[in-house]
Length: 513
Ligand code: GAP
Image 1 (cartoon, protein in one colour):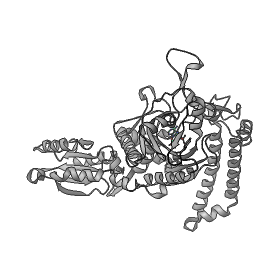
Image 2 (cartoon, rainbow, N blue to C red; image 1 turned 45 degrees about the vertical axis):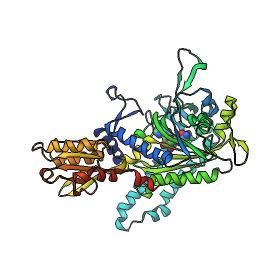
Image 3 (tube, rainbow, N blue to C red; image 1 turned 90 degrees about the horizontal axis):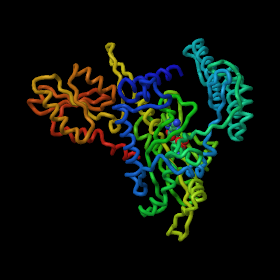
């Protein structure tokens, strides 16, 4: 656990030091759970968006895009259920005046018990040395078994209070477990209340309830309210999908873990409109399709797992998460939800407008069912950054820090480096740059030794460094250094554009989808 916490700290500081992610408004000490994407971060983010958009829209004849407004008519959120049901259970400590999510307090308590189990295991490991068998110890040691059954019991209790939405029982559970406020150390808790996660603001100059509008908490509703416009103008036939990338806002109470849980974040969502009764088939199809998209990045199959929901969101009849192995453990990266006709029926009822699709194959109108895929762009960014960051031992006391970002997603595709800052090498390097820059984001660098420049490019994940040396002037060749193998190959300048284009193309990733 401690080791992974160290890894996570390194990811955060690397992101800042090398221009990927900065705390928002840092000169004013930042704003909690809000971050800015810096010069390299914005490139990586744009590349992730492009990879998703190509896989979802360009590769599917029956999926089209949309870019809806963040502000929507307030009735949207009444219809979608977000005004009434998009809540987190909150509890305040009366002494510290700090506010917590009740479920997180219980989950943290479970983590503490897990920590005790880890300690027991470490102690035993020390005692028994090489002969230690962790699986056997876990299965037989009295202390571990007792703690494990305590954890299971708490999990069951938590699930019950959540499912029954029993706020009194929730508070009782916190008291029974003897949970104290991490700041004041006291057990002086308020009642548990439901807290709506939507940010409200006011439209124009009119004050009062009627004018309250919300910053959208999900991009999906922009798709639902436009579904018939798109279907008709695009002459789309069911099954078809609408994809969108955009900002979403949630007033998260527990906002921590860097860009994993933010108050302003970005989603990449796709709603797939289907015939009622076919939802099971499409749910399985999209689970599998989205998993392939993730795995094509080459981070290893063991980095992903499905988590099937037991407690559904208010709109779903089936739901699964794709979880990723972040430095702080397996956590949700993407959600796949079978949303039935919940949203469209609700919008039909609240707007009074028919939202039915006429199916020419069966000569009937119906409200389509929807299977949704919803991935957090910022979480995808964190998944890539935290997996790509490596400290490599190069032997002889040397080491390097490298970001093994898949070349197609790397912020800078190629760095063009004159070996020395004289003898006409900078001019030749600039010539190469002036050709490559039309197709790729490239960097020209002449300061410091070429070794130092390689290290700087490794640290931002540049897959290829092109070095112009004295031989270049004689035979029009350069060396290309591969970031991962550190091997260099000599090629002619005439072939350069083709070689780089092939190496950084998204095609090979998309072909695995
Ligand atoms: N339209 C369905 C929906 O919004 P969700 O599971 O609440 O479902 C989808 O969110 C995805 O959005 C999550 O899997 C996660 O990747 C991302 N996400 C949700 N809340 C987030 C937050 N506060 N910060 C960053 N990403 C978040």
